[in-house]
Length: 362
Image (cartoon, rainbow, N blue to C red; front, side, top):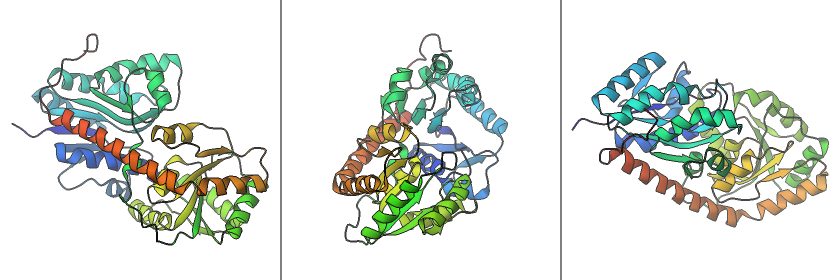
């Protein structure tokens, strides 16, 4: 029997290390199950390296070449397709994968191949885009979304933690020094207030903690510079090159971090998986971080700070930091839940001939 050929997009926001983290995790899950065909697009070399593609993988920068190879594999009956994880923007542009992949995925299903969708979540929740994405969802034999709102919206599939929760060590060195507060905020949100700044600075001083402002997403660099100046903090910036080196440097900082403060979901998850306690100290009222952490069994991460003074912000930081043991236990459970999804994905992609395509999808 010929080796299974697994086609998976590895494209993402090339300036966003969070996109690398969850795509790399899926690639690691898939690698033992067949030969990988990974589309990385016009990504910089550092992105592909950090993604973890190996010498045995077939890497494509041309979408057309990758797609034609997928169609040939589908026609032979040895091809499977796994949709990329991460955020789906349910707009016509955002849904191009889910519409353009219908012929390849449909042919794979018709010829006995497998189709799966692991670790994605919707950003928009309007009725029309739901109708447009439904045929793509129906093709997937295993569908697991990373937040409950998406499960309820698309009415198919199950709930799973975000793939990035699988990163980091299995056990933490609780005796290690955690002397740091990490701050990392989005550039496309309002500036934090003076009370927000004062609350963090006062909490750090009262608890003998240094503050490091970190850049995990390149466009956030100007906001990092501003925050480091206002907080009197160290700056761990990024110039957009050497993605792997920047992630390793960030994780080294996260391993010394007591409390991670951010409105970037994957900053919080990456720090959390290195043993830091996460808190989304929001300057808006987005529910994105809370609903994704809740899917991993972790509650009360987000705090809407509008109207809060410095003392109240400091009090909330202390309350969250006191929950360290509870949060670390929840992370262990989230990792176990992810292993269960990984096992079912492996069973799907290496099992017997797949079930027929649902009526009306071909």
